[in-house]
Length: 82
Image (cartoon, rainbow, N blue to C red; front, side):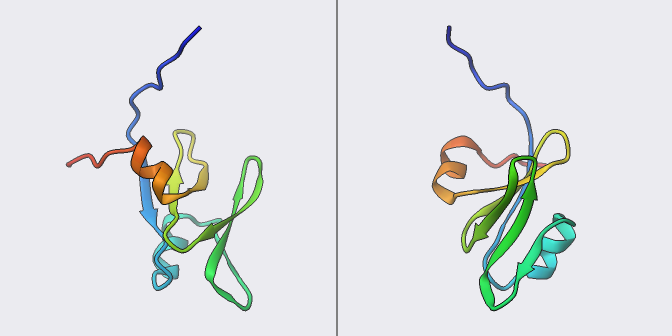
């Protein structure tokens, strides 16, 4: 069998290394990693995941958060105009 992903609008923001406060506001569970200013830690339903520079933080359909590599994000999502 084959399946198509349902079109769902998600919220996301990109971690750029200089926006930790915005990331914390967007994703209240995100944690800064001591002595590692280029990564964030995101608790997910599957355990803790590291968010590296350039990764996107996605808010899922059930309010969960998870990181996504930029190349996968670009292939999976397109920007929606308000």
